[in-house]
Length: 111
Image (cartoon, rainbow, N blue to C red):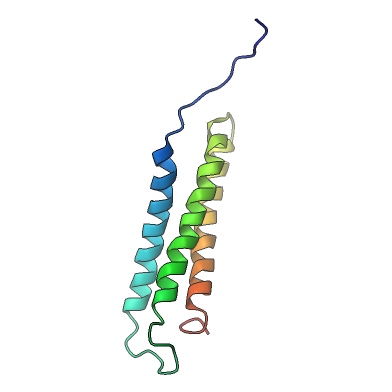
């Protein structure tokens, strides 16, 4: 009787997975581009030195996709929220990509 109208929107569970996989795919593509251009790796590096960056970078950028998914509910409010959240999401992905590259390449290409 005295209930307030609620704003409801459909939340698709596939959208979280899609955002995380998209971020991980972008991270994997970029780190693969850098790693495949290494001609002569330093002999002091471990034998399987490429595995660490190939795992860390996609996980870091997938985490940014997770954060963007949780912020997505604020994009549907009025005003500048949509633009602000979109810019914040893009900056978050760039920072996550950079931090993933730093952590993944530490001790090898990032000296």
